[in-house]
Amino acid sequence: MSSSSVIKGGFIIRASDAPSDAPSAKMQLKQLFDPESWTYTYLLWDEDTKDAVLIDPVDIQVDRDLALVKELGLNLVYGINTHAHADHITGTGLLKRQVAGFQSVISTASKAIADVHVDPGDEIHFGNHFLSVKATPGHTEGCMSFVSDDESMVFTGDALLIMGCGRTDFQGGSAGTLYDSVHTQLFTLPESCIVYPAHDYKERTESTIGKEKAENPRLGNGKTKEEFIEIMANLKLDYPKKIDVAVPANMKCGV
Image 1: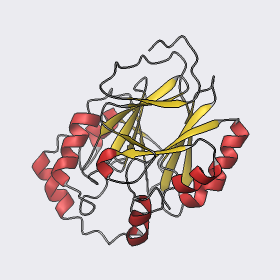
Image 2: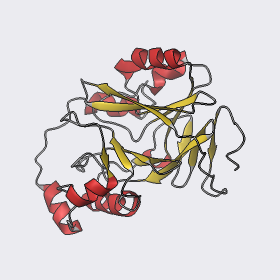
Image 3: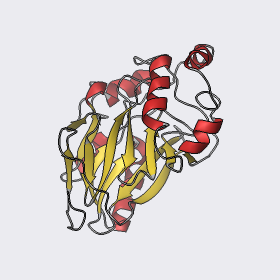
Image 4: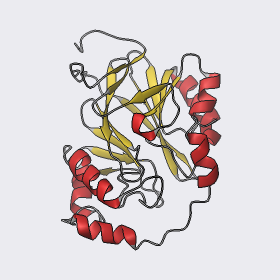
């Protein structure tokens, strides 16, 4: 697809179709934070068409998100969930009720209800920009990461956190699978690629692929798969407080 023409709205290009060229203008980004669940939500938009997407919206922050969308004059086309979260309820259900034409997006592998299901290699387009879909299971079976069209940014959900990763002891998680996902799908991105995770508990906002490869104490610095599996098996984490409410709701688009 040529990057010289302006295209408004949102659409999906499947992996079986020809890949798209990255546009010359940079994707716009606003990082938002929910202090209750320590969740980062990302608002991305095309400056020319004003088409926008939200990644990992939180239900109790929908009013904040919509106020920002209105302030910036954006057309919100998609709400994208990296996976069915266990620590908060997604905002996509509420957004669907309030934004005409808005659609929810999640992976086919998640088995969750959504308007649009995506698979590895698909592209989520908004205006002249797009996110490439990568399967990064291991935290859950349905985890996806989303790479900006110029590979300058990746939104990793809970698969890769800043100097850490998501737990692997529920929702079909697997330490071995997560290790493979990170090393084959994320650590192969450019080292300058900025990592934007779904959470951080130390108020850090971003990292890079190069930094995580070199310094991540669980997955980087030459850690073997066997070492990683042992680390994850000995974390002794508490049962998530909201899992019994959040997961059933998130499997139904947050409603």
